[in-house]
Length: 274
View 1 (cartoon, rainbow, N blue to C red):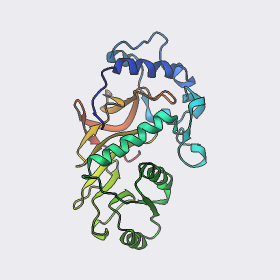
View 2 (tube, rainbow, N blue to C red; view 1 turned 120 degrees about the vertical axis):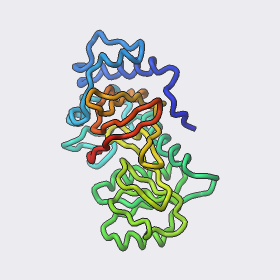
View 3 (cartoon, one colour; view 1 turned 90 degrees about the vertical axis):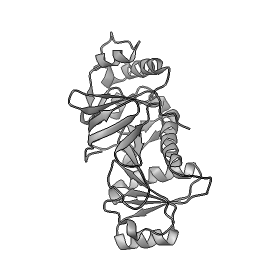
View 4 (cartoon, helix red, strand yellow; view 1 turned 135 degrees about the vertical axis):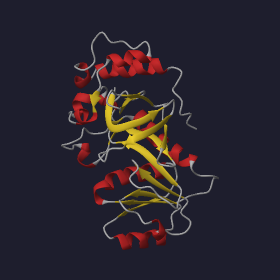
């Protein structure tokens, strides 16, 4: 299971990540040639990149190892006008899958075979499909329901009677869910549930699953995969430790930090933009 602790070889991982980043067109103009990572503090010599700026880049300009790309998320090969495509190699995909499933398993007891339903708005249908892929990969049957008629959505849920409901819609009514639901999974504090156990995944589009919470207040950070810092204006800065295909170095998110300890994060504000 995941340790949620910063790796002992974090300096080595950061050094590899920065070297990979220097091989990209984008970071070669951002990271000074003289910067070498011998300690975590050396990372501060690299300028912060706002998430909005990073998302404006062409995919070709942020890839360090194009030949290792195995998966590009989203519609149309991820080619969106307002966001750089999320491209991964096998290592990066495995990390994403494991983080999500480990967080899920931490909330469930026993070895019971569980069924999952994913309820999604039409604009999040591709993310719903990706989530279903993760669940099915680990042997958990998953249905995806598009919420085009809320009444029918609840009817489908009562027919399938899932153990886990992944919520990708606004305004879920807990009282309409079938008996036997053990857990609801939400993202970016989209909704606070009052009756059912909840797992809220802290996700930043294009970066990954950064942490998770069962109370929507204190988020357990995935320190084993990411390094977290805070910018001068209080926003969370993220560096991916193991992403060699599409390096992510000192990306400043839109989310404001209230407190950041060793592995627990509390937010002052989670942006409405993921």
